[in-house]
Length: 402
Ligand SMILES: Cc1cc2nc3c(=O)[nH]c(=O)nc-3n(C[C@H](O)[C@H](O)[C@H](O)COP(=O)(O)OP(=O)(O)OC[C@H]3O[C@@H](n4cnc5c(N)ncnc54)[C@H](O)[C@@H]3O)c2cc1C
Image 1: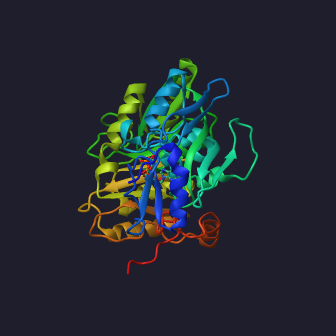
Image 2: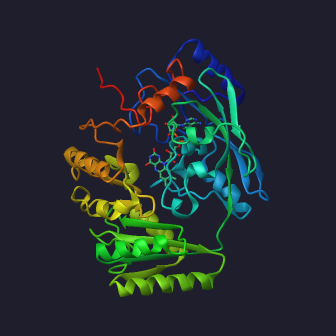
Image 3: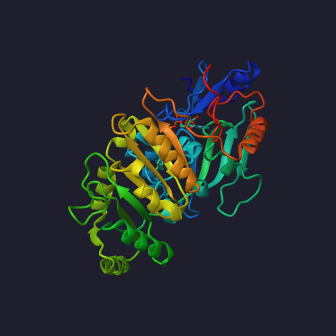
């Protein structure tokens, strides 16, 4: 992996372009192994030397940060000012393994907190990058209302390093919520599903409403009453407010509604909520053979929870987004079950991405997206020599290995 100093980066990219050499951008390299691998012989150019906060304007609620800055460093700095970037830690990574801010944008994935705060692309208000030909480009700005220029931010969010190298990003921040509480809900799937629909349409605006089946033998939020105990999925809810009394009212309201449906509710203090998330996910997402990204229409989320191919496997799935993750060992999950699951996700208006799989299996990370012609046309515009992340263009199935 090459880690150029900031002053060397542009010339390095120009040189790679002159040689038409294949290469892939990287952040801290924490999850480069996921998904399809770039062609053998590709160089990897890491942004780890592009590190630090360029400008934080607490009054404007914006921060500009070099792409190689670890997410954990950015959150710690914002916390000094009572602010945060409204994103979950990447699953299973906790703080330190959370990767760089550029990597977070390039992958474009967010967790359950998107229920209230939306996704990575919605936090981005500016981006700077180096194109494949070494030319610097910029879009957006440093103020929340800036809409000048093409919307490169959304294009680069989830681009998996295939369109250019992100050098810095400007993100919106929010005040840290002074009060946060959680609620673990367990009961019959049909009743939980009714409660989730009601919550999604209510004015309570929880931070997360996740379908939840803990991994690693996790026992949910307490025996009998927690979210997802043993093999049953439950709901994990997180609520935030400036006012503790408001939260108590919301918890009482949801619990009462749940009780009427035969649902058990267990209120969680902030530390218990955090522990629930960490314990439920455990080391699984980072350590297991299979790591699957799941997506279905939100209305089909309960069907996915009940899907036999997922039975007994850990699951974390946003009730409002229909986006989630599951993981398993090779022994627990044969490849044919993953294929069945993929078919179900497609039938329910979504998709399945294989982020990691056992060496014994060779499933495509993703199937061709209907937007393939558009994706390829954009790729040709940004990277006419097809240098970047060859073989891992998101949404485009790589050609079979020869
Ligand atoms: C709740 C949550 C769950 C997540 N789950 C997953 C998940 O399941 N799978 C997953 O892959 N990610 C997931 N992420 C995203 C994860 O945060 C990133 O993969 C991680 O931050 C990568 O950090 P890194 O610096 O180590 O990047 P790397 O591992 O170095 O690179 C990751 C990808 O980003 C590209 N990239 C990195 N930096 C740049 C840059 N500066 N310019 C252009 N491209 C770049 C690389 O080419 C590669 O495709 C999740 C994030 C959240 C918030």
